[in-house]
Length: 341
Ligand SMILES: [Zn+2]
Image (tube, rainbow, N blue to C red):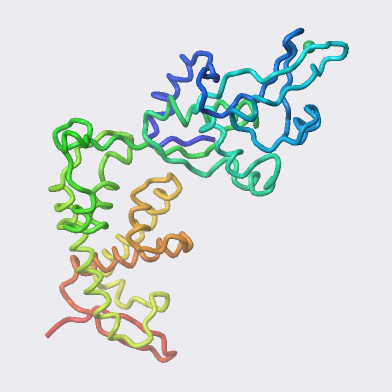
């Protein structure tokens, strides 16, 4: 099962490309490139394709070390067909570099020569990300080679992003200087502001956007500062409760207090949204993971972090009353919403 993000790419851009796909000429007539590993007899035109360096060494009677040009072109040998007195030399062409991009899943782990287990554990890939025009490029070449070699799809989720254009709607261009210095944007607004701006935009859903520094500033004002304030509010009061851990919170008065019930309802809705988004590889969730700064922890931990943030935000917006701490007879902390006098 292959999931495309956004979903319309499947039947649309990629589907239509597959329908109209023509034969792919994988050879190129140039010097530099990956030499095509095919040897041809000058007499009977028989072809020989070695399956390994070892086999090529054996057949040619020489120790093959270098597969690049020009050295590989000096590897010549007697025709492999019985009775033929011809000589075999390599065909002069190199591979289209897109062929190499499509070979990535195998080449990166030197499969099938080694790392068989590692390869099998990671193929098909859970997800890949590239810009939407790769439906004719990388997404396509990966698919063609996987279908031919493995008889299955090479990835399970393909996230297609759009192109970030300059504010004037043209391509970003060094000569036109129609874009701001990225590092200055980061210095001015912070990397999280830039992340939120981009990841909350349509560019992560396959559409092109015009980059606007004002938009980054607005993201900081609308999302980051309220989130930061909420976190500050939350931690200030959480620190007052000695030994506080989120796992030990028990809510009091949840039946009676409309604000509490509203908060808990929002939290449950959020959990569902995060679950659904994570399953659908929605990058808005990845945005939250990156903001946390813990890239390698379990996904569950990220979700907890996200929920804590949003909970804090909800508390700030829904309730104008601060926390107070309470411990019950078993020593379990209870956070209670109390009136302020
Ligand atoms: Zn021959």
